Length: 233
Image 1 (cartoon, rainbow, N blue to C red):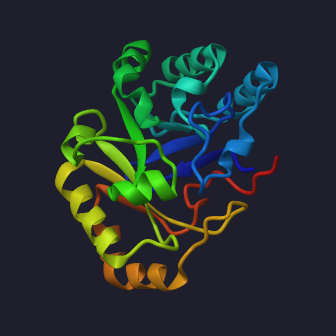
Image 2 (image 1 turned 120 degrees about the horizontal axis):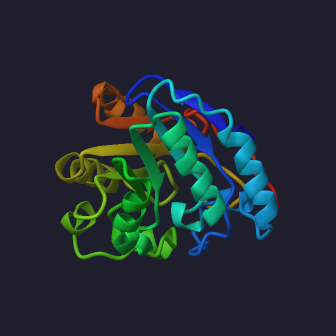
């Protein structure tokens, strides 16, 4: 499992994949990264400290991901991140959060005292597919409501059952309502949710031009940011 990387293309930043406590939602049907979570706080904090030591601060921007939400990191790890932010003169922080924590985002901003971009995994704006198939537990009235909390979202493309029309609609919504976005091309993992190679090929032929959009990042492979890898229980 790679836990430190450097993103030197769009929005240059260092990135770390930390351990956290169990994801408080934890029933997304497509996610097996929750196997990286732990109930052993000493193990979590110790491993995270070893990863955080790799941060240089040379890009003055840092992204922290943790197979869940930043709110599930131990308090000691949050203190360690804050110390790194101050020591390495980090000017911008990127964190991830489930939609359930939308009312707590300002607490985290106040804690770090620097600009924070929160990324939220919406996966798709098709309510049935998002909540009944993927079991995301993300419910809202319309995209504008989501954008009132999150300026950056993640979409997922290439899952069996998705349609071209769903993906086209998702891309239009992303471009209309959000300042930043990450499009993750789904890959088979240990879950029962499977990829659709033909749909992925269609997306590549139709939307590869989005790579030239400075506000969008496309992960053709889930380790394209330099972190991640196989998980196990």
